[in-house]
Amino acid sequence: MSQSNQKHILEGYKQTEVGVIPEDWEAESLGQLVSITSGESPSKYVFVDSGVPYFKVEQLNNHFKYAEETCYHFTKGKTVSARSVVFPKRGASILLNKIRIFTQNSFMDTNLMSLTTYEGLDSEYLYYFLTYEGLESVADTTSIPQINNKHIIPFVIPLPEPEEQTAIANALSDVDGLIGSLEKLIAKKRAIKTAAMQQLLTGKKRLPPFDKTHTGYKQTELGEIPNDWEVSSIGSVLSITTGDKNTQDKDDNGQYPFFVRSQTIEHINSYSFDGEAVLTAGDGVGTGKIYHYIKGKFDFHQRVYLMHNFCERLNGYYFYIYFSNNFYDRIMSMTAKSSVDSVRREMISDMKIVLPPIDEQIEISKVLTDMEQETEALEHRLNKTKQIKNGMMQELLTGKTRLV
Image 1 (cartoon, one colour):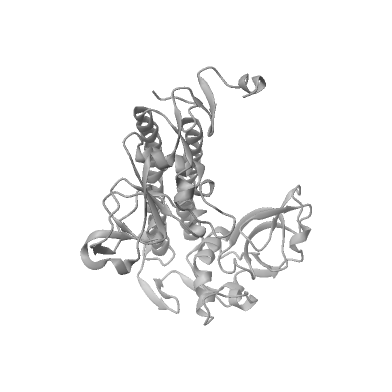
Image 2: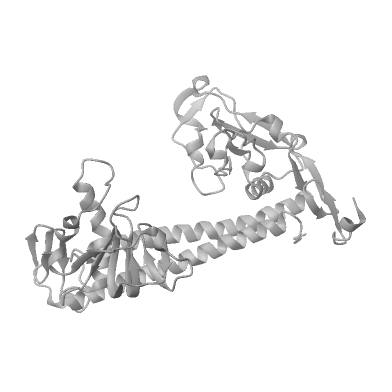
């Protein structure tokens, strides 16, 4: 090592094959630390209703550290020990970094490989290190990505003492626990909002003070709704138009929002509309799935539909909520295919909408907006926690920050 390189290494650290690590860490090849197992074809196993679980690549699709229970169970096969680290050994799944840990003795198919750690290597530490490095750093990616013994055996990892490995794994596991809790809470909030929306947009649930004036229900073409609500076609309560711009008209430094046929909002230095509006893609992969609500100046693509000029019986944000949650089902019901290529104006204008009294529309919008903002705040916290975890992995798995 040259003297100039040595000057950049802090006291207590050393240069190794895996970069600069603490002096009391080692750099060891995985072949000395693990037992490598490849899966077998299911024809080698005997299917049973209950027994040892059998895993395929698709059983690694969850976002959690541990491989979830599978509906497949077999007997009489090559068993992989609990606590083994498992991952795909060929195909695009390698690039998706699908790494998990078996919670019990398991069987696995030919597309999976497992690493069972020897004494001195903590399996959860290995899981986090492989997750941090990425399977593509181990694999041969010159053609079809693949991993076999010749890639695993020489692969070098930094190796702290077992106590520090456990401390690192525990710290990262705590953050994983927080991430998992936030994901579950967000899913619960989403489900609650969906249920509330179904109740509020059909009048099955009335908000105060409108519940006090409730006088029963009536049957309509959209089903049963409160007697004081009505059904109208969208074309009779607002105006519909399209833009005159193309995607290449965007300007990354533009001062106005530019709505194109994707969820991404571009920018532009012109505006053709100033006011309250709802927009949706007229064709492309986002047909029936992309919706925007805005108040202000903006421009929009020639194949984006703009709905505006809401009549006195329609609240703009209520329309956005109702339309974005019902339009996709409408256009799918009008085609025999599994997707729709484009939207015709009459698909929007002839669509029916349920109209509560305008004051009730506003209150429904407020309740659902509050619920959405609460979920968005949790999602922001989740993203921040994931960023913190990435920073922790970089610090802990390289020894820049020590826990022991």
